[in-house]
Length: 332
Length: 291
Image 1 (tube, one colour):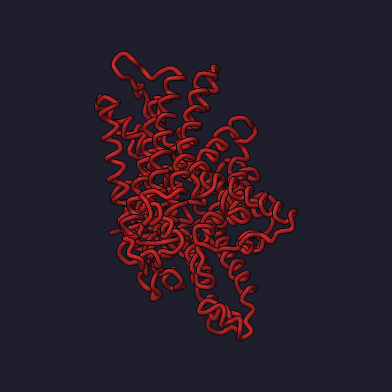
Image 2 (cartoon, rainbow over the protein chains, first blue to last red):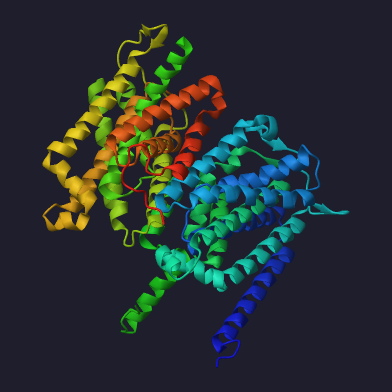
């Protein structure tokens, strides 16, 4: 009779614990070490983008479904909290659960018809949803402020302690990212995670094994929408201003690119993809004219040559070359 | 009534353009089972090429149209050879991301080549409006309709009467069986890409005199074309025509009687609705792949 834990499970658990402790230590060190406010803000944005990529990665990488309209959920989070706090004068801490609940409801409403479709139709459907979101943000100007946007979103505060200065918001965002990472790791390693990977490999086979595929797909879609809305909430209270251009189609493509670069089905890859796509455009100022060109090329090249993403792809290439050097046949 | 007729006229004109874009989606889907997310960008390239060649270089209209369609077909061939063919595991997600990548790439190129300003081409012939039952109809609308109908008729003949068309149809039904019977199915896929890209370019040529064209017009047009194709039934030529005209008229009436801000949302609402209620479309017989 096997015990409650096998040896490999225990060592896996320890490895995970060490990795997460290292991650937490890195966040703390960065918060203490980085003094330049500009760099701190950049790091904070990386955190927000990581949340976006992480959510979409759960959908694309693990459940094998695509969303080309995730910017709409990001925008929904930002606009919902903006409207609730600016127009209705709610406290941000009450608007947070309301925003998340709204995002979950919308995601459910969208997912119910959409996830009955697969592949190309899901892509087009989510693309259309993203467009509707953008049109609403821009067109419903009495509420959203239209093209000129919504200004004066208050910063977050607990009593007298405000999350206004760079380091405090940095810790708030990265604390959220840290908790989300642990949550996602737990999900991926659970029964649900295994079921998701089964759906990714073959939906029919998964259904035949008794997995309720449509319920799971809908749950993951809602989860990824929640991550995006949470990122939108953090974004809105950080910059205190939202406008439609931050949530257009290109933003949806950018999130997909982060996931693709980092590697689908890789939680840590989301961090890599988000970092690269936040830092590079910021460093290369000439980049802005060529942004679309570069994203398009990256999406095509990575998908054609390294469909597992940069991290996994480079590791694979390295292993293959090492195997060849040592005269071994490449592992199947 | 007069007002209503006016909306219908403008709806039919736009609808004919949507129909041509939908035909591009449909014909590629029919031959390969693929949806090209860059189809809208091919339309944009067609429109901008026409404006540059005709208005910029001062070539004759016919030559400019032929050249624009030729150039964009070349882009379609390049897309198939350089990207789609290289994919080893054609999982739908991978193909979606590659064509989305291609669409963003084309947009980026167009922004560098043509800049961010919107431009417009003049009408194909005289611009004196015709008056029918109190409503006015621009000659350009007749051009658009005539060219659209001409394309559908040509496509119909191509599928029914020519050997190549029949071979393409055979590939669509069963690629392996067609290959065993000596149909060069690889070349058929390439031809389908070239033809559907060319069809996109024709859509662009038709729309250039009607609205302002710019590098970022493609996504919307592509989605509307797809919506029209889904509405009529993906894979069916006459379905695309029906879907395109229906979408155009609904849009025009929506703008006329409700609000112009809603114009673009109408197509997407309709798309979501069809995907939910009847994914096979009005004329489509083949079942959409649902799990």
